[in-house]
Amino acid sequence: MLPMVGFNTNILTLQNGVESVEMISSVVSSRQILGGTIFIASEISEPGVITQFGNKTKITLGELDLKNSKRSQNLKNIFEKTNIEATVTNQILTAIWEKYIALVAISGSTCLTRLPIRTLMEEKTTATLIEDLMEEVISLAKAKGIEISKNVIARHKEFFQNASPKMTSSMLQDLEKENRLELQWLSGGVVRMANKIKLPVPINQTVLAAIKLYENGAPKLVT
Image (cartoon, rainbow, N blue to C red; front, side):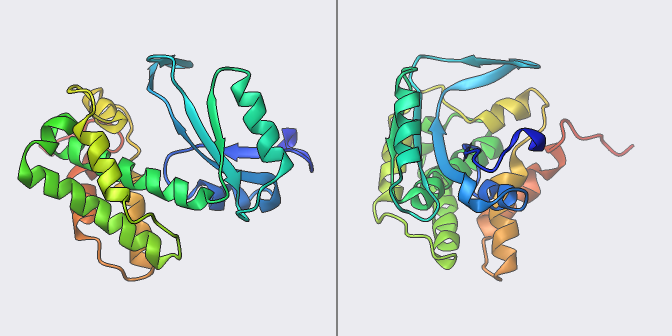
C-alpha cells in the first residue's frame, strides 16, 4: 500500500496493542500518523468478511504530539456522518495504553481458563489474576513515561463485572477455532517490551508460556 501514501496522506492506526505507531513510523513520517482506539463487537466470519454484532462503534483519536488539530476534528466529523461515535483527545497515548491494559487482562485470563470474563470475576482467585495482569501493564506504561488514570483498574473491573455472561475475548474465539492468535501483541508484547527495560512481568510471562504453542493454530504433538 505504500505507493498509495502521499506526503499529505493521514494514517489513523486502530490496531490492538501499543506498538503499531512505532512500526508505521519506520515506514512513513510520524507527522502523518494519528493514534486511535476502536471499540466494536465483530469477528472474521470468513476470509475477507467481517461481521459486526450490534450497531455501536466508538473511535477515540488524537495527535501523537498531544495537541488539538484541524485534521483530528475533520476525521471526527467524517466518522459521525457514518453513525460512528468519535471522540478527539489530546491524551491519545493514555487512551491507547488504557485499552491495552484491559485487552491484555481479558485475553490472557479467558484463554488460560477457557471461560467468560464475568465468570472469572465472580471467583476471587481468577479476579486477582485479572487484576495482577492489569497491574503489570500499568507498571510497564509508567516505566515508559505514559500517564495512566488512577481509577483505570476500577473502571475495567466494573466493565468486566457487568459484561454479558457470555463475553470472552477475540483471542479465545480464535483459540477455540484453531486460528492464529494476537498473543505476540498482547501478553507477548508486554513481555517483549518489559524485557528490554528489565522489568519483571511474571504473570504475563506465564500467559505467554501457557499459550505460545497455540499461537499459529493447534500445536502438533510430539509422537
